[in-house]
Amino acid sequence: LYVDHPLGEGQTVPLDRDQAHYLFGVMRRGEGDTVLLFNGRDGEWHATVQAASKRSGLLRTDEQTRAQQMPPDLWLLFAPIKKARTDFIVEKATEMGAARILPVQTAFTNSERIRQDRLQAHAVEAAEQCGGTYVPEVANLQKLDRLLSDWPEDRHLMFCDEALVGAAQTLGTVGGNKWAILIGPEGGFSDDERTRLNALPFAHPVSLGPRILRADTAAVAALTVWQTTLGD
Ligand code: SAM
Image 1 (cartoon, rainbow, N blue to C red):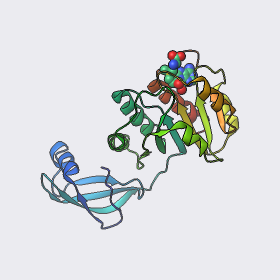
Image 2: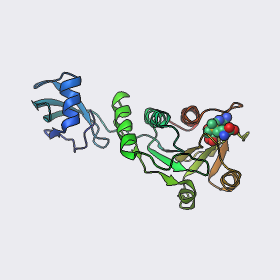
Image 3: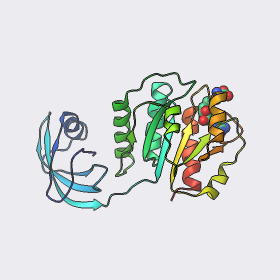
Image 4: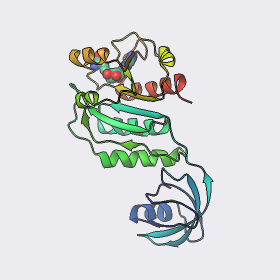
């Protein structure tokens, strides 16, 4: 269970209404039962339920069961698409070990806004489900242009575009440990964006094969390619 609370030995951890509902209502745990907790910073802890009610609860940590594991320093930039498919991208990026998820607005992006809090909650659920100890931060929607103007010099960008021929295997020869993946919207990138992206010194244009993948498929494929060529 994810808690936004410090974890250490003998730590008392309060549960809010949603967490109490999940743990005591859905998972049927009660007083004296044990639970595994993580907060994304302090590893995984074994805890015992001290008090349980419909609206709240109290846990007490016993011992650490796993040290904190940090994912590779990999960001996923993607243009949000339909709600269910955007949720899918956040869920899969969390499972695949992205450290940050950044929804970006490109020339052909349809949605003007996202529900950042909902997407962050999806990342928490996905981290709980896959047994990770880390939850990626989901950023608010920002303009791709602005993000690229302010780009950290030491971070490589895997620029995925179906109009390219660059083989993904060449990524392995680039090296570096700070990376980002960029996936475009359903309408793809505009000519101006392509020209700009292809000219960026830190961008590595990559093809994910001869077929046009949906943006959500492309995100999972790109994360897999990156993990295979550069991940640990
Ligand atoms: N509008 C484009 C078209 O119809 O030709 C398709 C865009 S595609 C649905 C969405 C995004 O997925 C693209 O912007 C790109 O980032 C990624 N993508 C899809 N297929 C790809 C491929 N074969 N190689 C690299 N990236 C791909």
